[in-house]
Every structure is written in C-alpha cells, then in structure tokens.
Length: 269
Picture 1 (cartoon, rainbow, N blue to C red):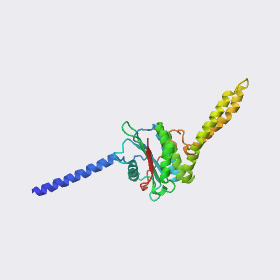
Picture 2 (cartoon, rainbow, N blue to C red):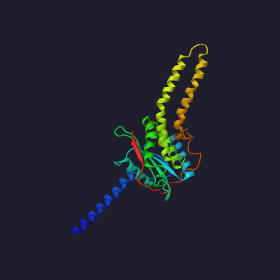
Picture 3 (tube, rainbow, N blue to C red):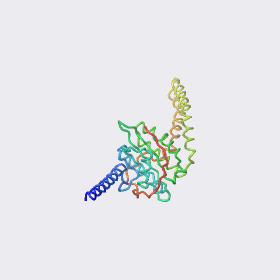
Picture 4 (cartoon, rainbow, N blue to C red):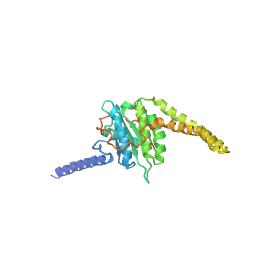
C-alpha cells in the first residue's frame, strides 16, 4: 500500500511540474492575437496612431503579395537570446503562408533602466534568398538602430518594413542595398563641405542686391539638401505619413502557418 501511495504521489508531482512548465512557456511567448493583427505592441513603444499606420501598411502588402511582415514588441525575453525568441515566436504564430514560408518577424525588446533594447529580424525559409541574414543585419544597422537611439521607434520600423517589402518583392537585388547605403555614407562628408562653402559664399554677399544674390546662390544649397533627403527615401517608402486608422480597408485575415529556419540578424541599443 505504501509503495502504491508513493507511486501515485510521484505521478501527481510529475503532472504538476508538466502543467506548470506549459503555463510558464505560455507566459513567455504571447498567444496569437485575436482578432489577428500584424502589429502587436505588447511593450507599449508606439502610439495607437502609429500602430494603426503600420498595420494598415502591412495588411495592404500582405493582401497584394501574400508575404506577411509582423512586428512584435515585448518588454522581456525571459532569458532567451533574441534570435531564439524570435524564431520560437514566429514558429508559434505561423507567420507567412504554409508551403511558401514567406513570413518576416521584426521582434523588439524595449529598453529599460536595467537592460538594453534588442531587435531581431527573422525571415522564413522562402525569403532567405531575397533577404539573406547579412541583409537583415544591415537593415537593423542602417534603418532601425539610428532611429531607435533617438527614440523614433515608429520611424525605424517604417523604414525597415519599406526596405523589407522592396526586397521581398524583388524591386532590387540583395547586394544592391548595402552598396547604395555605403555610397551615400561616403558622399555625406563631401556634401557637408560643399554646403559649408556655399553658406560662406552667401554670407559674404553684400550690397543692395544682396537678398536677390543670396537667393540665387542659395539654390544649390536646397538642391543639395533635396539630394540628401532623396538618398534615403529609397527605403523609407511612401508610407511615412499617417493615413489615419484602420477604416481604409479590410482587416488582417490571420497567419498562414509559415515555417522559419532560424536565420536572421539583430542588434541592440
């Protein structure tokens, strides 16, 4: 009798541990949202208007291409590495279409007083050719982190999603993205010097026609500034302005069961 009682107690303990482990796992990884959404700001890093603008943008892209780009912000990775967490969450939710595996997850762990902010881009099997790991890292470095360091979370996510959409749609080859960014970075010091010289020349202008002279001299300055802005607009897309809420079209229909291979890249700020 004693042995039977002891056996029952052991079995009960094992069951309790298993149930407790399942509950802990469920708390570590959020459940798929209902109703379904592509933008899920669990960490509260965005305003409602910003969430709606990104949602409308990504739903429209999903509807037209079937490629699903999801954004998830969390306040805690529960001890997981950001890449592992993103992989597990993307698989749990099934981002992308089954068979096509054309899902992308942008995972953001918010910055706190005791921990740095973390960001990871994970792409599905079907997008590893169009968006290889090295390119995910460049998008994080060039588009997301500069904005995040200034607290511009929406702008960073908007730029990153526009670039990912262009790459996934094949608007330009993967190797072209990094080269363009490098070329722009190399030109910035030269542009600054030219602008500085023009300002000095304009300041030296004098006489009754001074104002008109500055206006004509100042034209190249505005042209140069316009060139600087257009240099980055390739990846910022036409979605930067808020289009106002979710009322413009149909809502997101839900994730399609895509798979992820553990690729991607990330960074911290």
